[in-house]
Length: 107
Image (cartoon, rainbow, N blue to C red; front, side, top):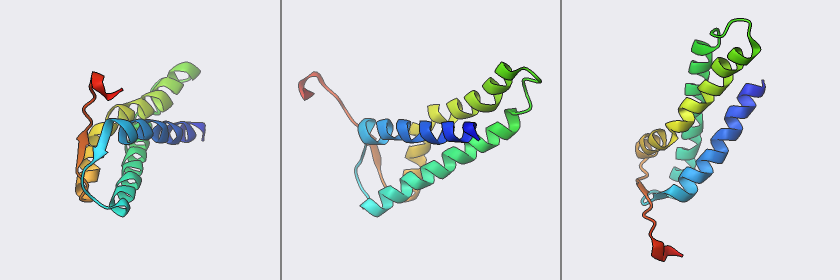
């Protein structure tokens, strides 16, 4: 149960950084953007569940290795792919995402 809570919390924190700061929605209405975010959440949890199922049996009886294989890796892999997943999913709902360009003059 705690592993699902960890994945859900990590998603919303990382999604806020990625889609609130690093990427800009250039096209699409607010409804499409919200739908894209919810679909990102569903895809993230789907990848997490698949990896958790596939890797959960690894690690044997050891509590540490079971935690690493069953919780940490299934959470970390989709988190690292969130930018690419987001670009694909937002594109499917009609929202164009572009990476923000930061410069020294921005402050």
